[in-house]
Image (cartoon, rainbow, N blue to C red):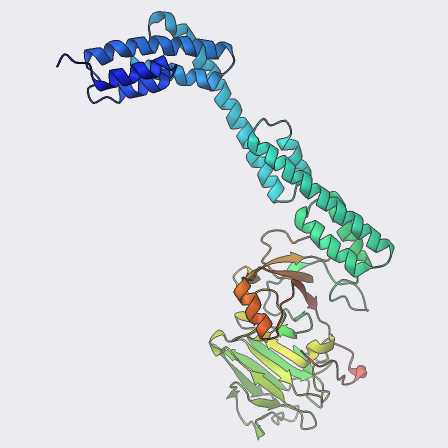
Amino acid sequence: MFLEPIECKQARDYLARGAALEAARVLLAAPEPRHRHIQRLLLDVQAVLLKKAEELFRQGQIAEAWTYIQTAGRCASLPAEAQPLAGHVAAAYQSLVHSRQHKEQRLLEARRHAAEGHLHTAAELVQGLSLPEAQALQDDLRRQSQRLARYLTQARDFLARGHDAAARECYRRARQIAPFDPEVVALGAELGARVPPAGQAASGPVGPPAPITDRNTVWRLDTWGVVLSADEISIGRAGGPAMLPLWGRLHWRHALLVRNRQRWQITPCRDSKGQLCPVRVDGNTLQAPALLTHGQHVQFDSGQPAWRFCQPLPELGTALLEAALPAPAGTPLLGAAAHKRIVLLADQLLIAPQGPAHLRIDHLPCRQMCLAWQPEGLVYEVEGGRAETELLSGMPADPPPQHVYLPSRIVLEGELEETEWLGRLMLQREPAEAMSLAIRPVEPAARAAGPSPGEPFR
């Protein structure tokens, strides 16, 4: 009962080695902290701690001095002569904490600006910060700035030599680093002026880019098809009021395509004499509305080949009309190969390199892309990759970037896993590292131009 606790011997050993903090922690953690030998030794340890705290404070090691003062206060109530020291150390430590918090906030802001591509702002914020993490960020910003300068120099060199495509690739890489850098913005504007904007007709310029929010908007998805989203689509002669004009001997309003939930119904209209306009489905002339099923052939003019109705994912409602080849059937809506395929976009359009999809693009760099109607308009999502909307100026679209803008380009980059990449290679469908899909407006071609065979669709 009169023997000292073992913690006293351990604490004296620590004191002998100059480890007063460890001595205090051993005594404070003893099973019997109120033992008189422990209480007496705690006073000795406190005196050592206070002396060390004063020494550290004079050396400017505020955080360490505060640790010694706190531990001394746990050993016993601080004596009156130690109170001024404790007050000075506490005030200095509080100022140190505030300074550290301010620096960490600046570092956080710098990281946010760096992530958004504001390299100059990030560099100014991190300048002079005495934090280890700040130095690492400074080094990264320096490397990014060097890469940005190299891409901008290369782009200017390519432009001077007339290699616009190579200049655009350098610009794309520069924009990934710092999309809002003044030099990048200026380069994008220059490239936009040199390259005809997607969807600009020879008759005049198109309007400024805007999100597609109206289902009655007719637009073109690069070379892959003319897209219509209305629930009721009128089909008729080119140059007339029909939403979907087709080449051939058609009436002004020849037929109606109506979406009935997830299926499509075709209805022949009546001509000026009250007779039903000729519409054939799989060779049978319609006398009444009929629901279309995947694989059926629809013919509006006996002199033209049929359109094949495709609905590979019937649960999504979206369907396609594809003109037979190589006959010159199609729609006079502007656009090379697109006039051979009509996309009837219901709620979702799925694009993928393989498997069930509405459109198959073998070299698509991502796993799949989906265009979908939401309350705010038409949006897109990408799996297995990244995507960014590029407006005519070359600048990315304002948030949210998943909106589909008209006119614009959607730039896709792959992030496929190695197994997916190798699987595509085995199927001889090597994915591209990056590709862009142009979102273009369409305009009816002049009727006098006559039927055009166009290019085979892909």
